[in-house]
Length: 449
Image (cartoon, rainbow, N blue to C red; front, side):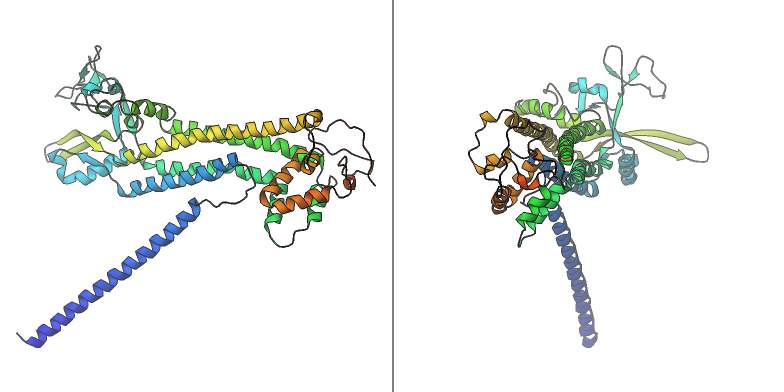
């Protein structure tokens, strides 16, 4: 053999390997860049930026934390959705068609028997009898076959009820959609609180802030009327009720789509967790099934029909296969975590409403029973003469810029040392007491020149 050809062949072979290595490198590089970009995008969505926000902490839990939790959960579920597959035990006759069987079972779903919940000792897996051919129950509660070998119905054997599961097909999309539901009340909040949002945005802009402009626009009843501020206060109470409704609705809606087994999932999991380890994980010894299996079983049955046709006749047969759905294991852990955060969301939203009502009640008590609240500081004396909405302005200014808060207090008291009336913004008809909602009885008012 010509050595030159050997060398040429070697060079060509090395060149081919070099091209393949370059291609693989570029491919891996593109994949790494894509994953990096995806990771950055996801991190931007789920990251929590510490800053002063327009709404309260109870509302932020619902409209920020919960949507981020739903997005993270749906991403984890999506990973299982695209990577995990059903694994089915098939008959030898179907061995060559195993992929078809598994794909078909994924599409049509799998099932367990509802009555098997009370027959754990006769179960191979939760909801599945030891003998899969026994799909019925007689009047004595014993398992039996609804059909004999000739495929004839057995009148003494009543078929058991099948409970189908297809949640793995759509559950990641449902969890992701909850993020929209939980963010919706904040959109309504922003619509009704444009004044507070514009005030916060103006303070955040940095640079020179005109204190006089803030006082003349937000604390001037000719521009920002008392009626408008009263309506906003009642509107925000409605928003608090809407946040409670969303949290409760999310809980109930999830229970509905999961077959009515989500509300009891948390308590049953806590009770099961108290059992000894050898009892909790032993189907024969446990007094009740695992909460995760009761909620979303990871093993189920699937029926596959087979048809054979030749020149003489057509033969049909039905195969009952056992399938393992590994993604349901992840869903069980994700939903138990979601259950506790659902509960915290309901409690937090209720506390948010109670805090708002307490603030309003305290302010009204301050107006009608001022002797119980000695006004020692400048802030106390100013707050006692403002509407509830104006007090919200000041509280928000204090949380964003403490220096600005002090300057506005001084601006409000520049022409009235005794803080009896804000004379600069009196109505043309005379002196008007600026009070909390509702308007307090007028007292002796001294004009300050």
